[in-house]
Length: 302
Image (cartoon, rainbow, N blue to C red; front, side, top):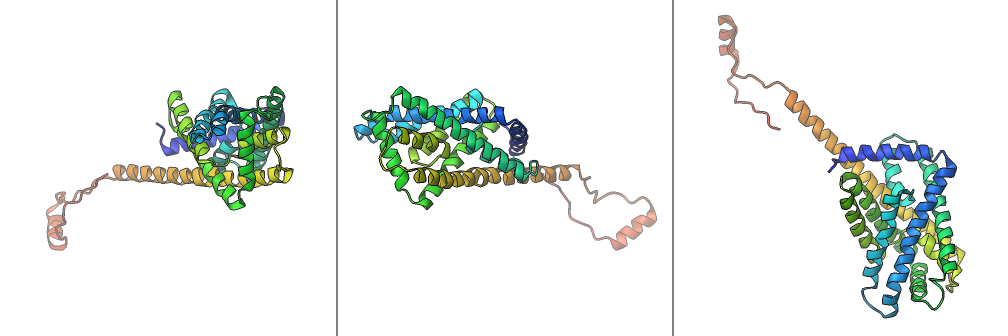
């Protein structure tokens, strides 16, 4: 397992690569669209798998939702895509380490967000055309209930749920960076995503697909204002959770570990004090006997 400083250095290097990739707007937009679509797949699987449980008032509905939604981040990690929520941590760590500029940080996240939105909308349209979430299906019933819940939440509730959500998402990514086993990484993704979905936290990219499916399938009382408000509030909460709660926290811990290691090296490299060294001459011995008080043994411990 990588240490905090090693994992942070990996993250900073990744942040620099992402900002460089974002200068190629076309290809970066495509990678971001894939991120939005992959998370959208997780939403669709959740609706279709947990929908029948919801219609039967089964208390396991949230647990089933959490279990299947982990497919989304697994696809992002393994297939490769740009997801704005995980990049909120990665790019912010590069910013905190002063390796990327604030303007570059903001431009990259904005492009990433818009690409995720395009990918989520595109996938939602294709899913709608397939009919799997149409009115009368169990998936539709669950979709309607989810959107009713999301639009009835207060702004503070949405914001803090979003903070908690992206803290878990970014912990999955951070843990994956530290781990060397692909299997271990996927296990961490599973548990972290299970935690956030089952708890009912808010993910801005998942909501892109959820709201678009709601519009296309005619879920009542869902407006463009509801969608825009959710994007702003949940996006801001996700940013705090990813950049501050996880990103900055581990920057601080990595710096502390680096300082502690440097202090250990300094202590080990300091010559031991020879308190009982013999005098080099009789005069020196006489002077030492008359002016120096015997000292206790000095020991340096790591």
